[in-house]
Length: 140
Image 1 (cartoon, rainbow, N blue to C red):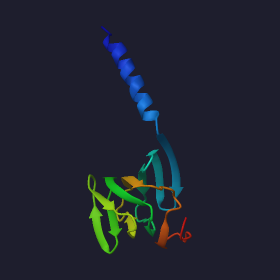
Image 2: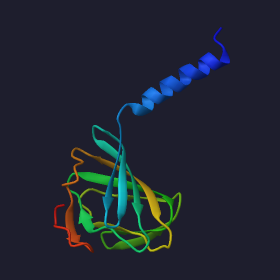
Image 3: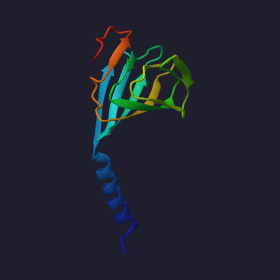
Image 4: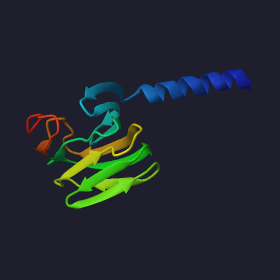
C-alpha cells in the first residue's frame, strides 16, 4: 500500500502534467486593458480579459466564432446587437457568431471576465470593427 505522501506526489505530478498540456498563458496588452490566453484547442480558446475602469472594446463582429463571457469581478456593460445589459460577478452572456457586440467597464474597479470562444477559426484577425475609441484599423 502506497503511503499518503507517495499518493500525494503522484497526484501532484499527474495534475501538473494535465494542466501543462494545451496551456498557452500568453498575455497581450491593449489600450483598454489586457487579455491572457489560458488554453487553446481545436475549435475553442479560453481567455482571461481585464478591462480598465471607464474603458471599452471596439464595437465589433466575428465571422467565424461565438463567445461566452462570464464575469469574475467588476461590472460589465454588454452590447449585443441593439440590446444593452449590465452583468455582475457570476453572471454570463452569449455572443453568437456574426453579431455586433461591445464590452465596457462602467465601474471604478477593473472588470475581469473569462471568455470562451468557439468556432472553426479563432484568430485575432477575425475582428470586424465598426467603432473604436483607439483609432485601430477595421480588421486589427
